[in-house]
Each structure stands twice: as C-alpha cells, then as structure tokens.
Length: 202
Image 1 (spheres, one colour):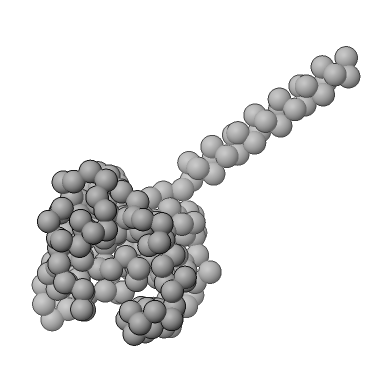
Image 2 (cartoon, helix red, strand yellow):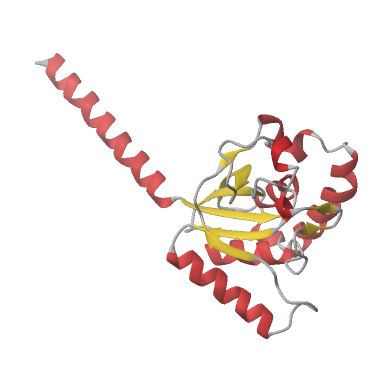
C-alpha cells in the first residue's frame, strides 16, 4: 500500500511539473529582427528584462542551411537576424519594437554603418498578424511624424525559417569585447542603448 501511494505521489509530481513546464513555454513568445550585424543586435536585446534568449541566425533567404561564408556573398537572400524568446508579461512586443527602431538606422538600404550588403538590411519578420499590425503601424507613425530625415526602408515580412548561425557567433560580443569591431562599433552602441533604456535592463 505504501508503495502504491509513493508511486501515485511521484506520478502527481511528474504531471504537475509537466503542466508547469507547458504553462511556462506557452507564455513565451518569439520575435525576429534584423538590424545589421547580428553581433550588435544580440548584444543589445539580450540585456532587456523579459528576454529569455537571443539567438543569432539567418532568415529570409532561398538557400537551406546557409553558412556564414555564403551569407557574406549577399547572394543567398538571407539577413543576419536574432530570434528573441521573450515573456510578454514582462516586456511586450511593442516595447521590443521601440528598441528595434531606436538602436539602428532604418533608413539606410542594405547597410548599417560600415556593414554593407543585403544581409545587413533592416527587417522585421513577424510571427503572427498581431506582430504584423504592430510593426506596420509603428513604421507608419514614424514616417508620418518625420522622425527620420529619410523614409524608412525596413522590410516587414512573414517569418518562415531561422537557420541558427555557427556557434562562434552566439554571444559574440560577450566573448570578444576586446576585438576591434566590438570595441569601436558595438561598445558605443551598447553604451548609448543602456542610457536610453536603463529602466528596461536586467
């Protein structure tokens, strides 16, 4: 009898843990953005409260399982992006869009600073109609308010597939802060970002 009760208790605990895990997974949502070099984008978004993870990868192209070398040719059609797993109860998609628009130049076509090519384009890959409407609405308001001197060229398109970038690209900035690109390009962007969004940081 004791053995049966113990077995039942274990089964109940397993079911409860499974339900809690399912609830936690259900509460998380995805966002996929391209703002130029994904080293910069990842380093910024992973600092936000409510962001569980930020994965660097390739999206929007015509080649399956592309390599970084192939991406750099600009011929695969992919953009360097990050895919964010976030808790909408802590940070909303609209708040993520706010960070997106303010941490890169959405008016330069296929270019961010010294990084040139279609792989560095400004792009939002929406995962559902709500994200599409929010992204398009935000873009329209920015254009109408003439926030930028030039028109916004950000591509807003349906998400299809993410191909995870090679392991050495993941957490690149954290692992290579002394590298020249990180020191001269990414660090200044992060310092500016942290001042503007200090209330949203982890």
